[in-house]
Amino acid sequence: MGMECPCGVIVNAVSRRNNVRFNGQMGTVKGNLTYMANVCATRLESSTLSLEFVDTETMGGVNSFTFKANSITSVDCDREGQNCEVTVTGTGLINGVQFPFTAEFRDQVASANVDIVQSFVITGFFNQNGAAPVAQGSIMALGCNDD
Image 1 (cartoon, helix red, strand yellow):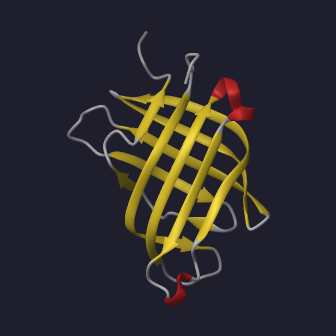
Image 2 (cartoon, one colour):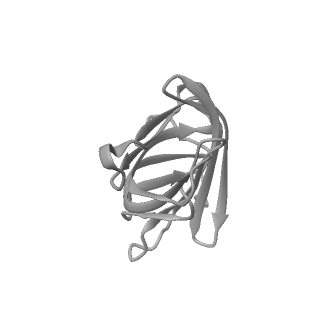
Image 3 (spheres, rainbow, N blue to C red):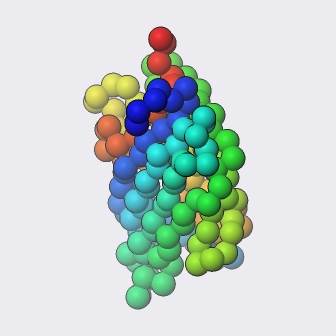
């Protein structure tokens, strides 16, 4: 990434067979989530974040969507024991409609532990409905190091 980032996260992660919720719909919808992020607190304007949901349950995948952040307003890094939790907030677009979002990514240090997307909420539209495990190393938190 070049310069050191005092607080941020790099994500390239997939979580499959998640039961997610959509505002205004009863129950949950099963599908696969792909998270991409390259976020740094000191470079918010050039930071990127996206979420793609592929509906694997509904005929025709009608609930599938791509969310792309158009403004990242804050990045917060918190050490949780040896692990690092990064919360990213801002706004983004789905089919040209803007929604606020909050995403929480947990980088688990121990190689035996999976990384976790603790939460991803697109206010007024979508909630990933609980923690989503992703492959170890697919979330790389920046700025929780003791240096």
